[in-house]
Each structure stands twice: as structure tokens, then as C-alpha cells.
Image (spheres, rainbow, N blue to C red):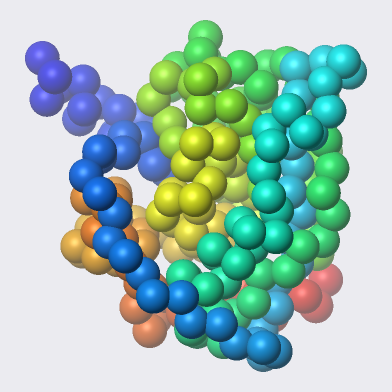
Length: 203
């Protein structure tokens, strides 16, 4: 029964649906002072109502950008830079527990009017408010649950939002299996990422 449930989740969800508990690989950070290809990233904190602020998430944005750049992107001459840090009040997106199987469609619908075309738009929700996902990715939009920000879910979903598809090769960032082994993009993926970044920056 567990194997059938896992198979259904993988088929239903286009992005990260299940994460393994194994310890991730250590990735030696590589930083570049002025990468050639820069991508602006808006961090958007999803809130249930106006009573809350983004401080509810207690996320160090600078540390998060260092993680993305040092571990995954700077080594390819790509730099993720912070655009805006903002909030979105959206109770439906904030709590996806009742929408199992429809998370991707709801994410795309509920963020359609709030994303900016000249950057990557990252939406953050609590992990406790989902059942089966760690993150999702659609064109220039990613959704990451707060507990998976500092895991390979982040570059994986950024990859989806920039046009990359799954590649089930151990160690590849876009693999659906063994997320604890994800470490790198291959050369073709890097070329595609760079081309998408150039296209976005020209908008």
C-alpha cells in the first residue's frame, strides 16, 4: 500500500512530492564576486490574514541567498540577487492541506496576478500546512515550504521555474529520487538556465 501511495504522489505532482530523510551531501560553497548572469529574486511570504507579518517565518534572507549562490549557482557564473521582500495575504495558498493533488494548479492560479515578469518569484508557506509537498515550480514562480528552504528542494524548484525538467540521475539537482544526493546541474541544464535568465532580464 505504501508503494502505491508513493507512486501516486510522484505521478500527481510535477515537482518535489516526497523527500527522503537521509543526510544530504556536504557541498563546499564556491562564491563569485560578480557573476556574469544575475537573476533577481523576490521572496514573498504567504500569510493567512492581515494580522501577521513576514517575521512570522523568521528567515534570514541574506543567509538563504548565500546558500543558493555558494552551493548551487555561483559555480556556474550565475548569481541570485534579492529583488523585493514582500507579503501576500492568501488563506487558500497558505494552507494547502485540503487541496491534496491540486497543489500545483492552486499555486499557479493564486499567484497569477502577484508575480513580476522580470524576475523569479518565490512564495514561502509553512511546511505544516501541506501534506505531500516540499515545493512546487511553474514558470518564473516557485513555492517552497519553510522547512525546505535550506535543502536541495530550493534549487530543484528554481530549476523548474526556469524551464528545467526532471532528470532522474543520482546527484543531479533535477532528480526526483534521492534528494539527499542532489548536488549539481549538468552542462546542458546550465546553458538552459543562463538562456532563461537572459530572456527574463530582457523583459
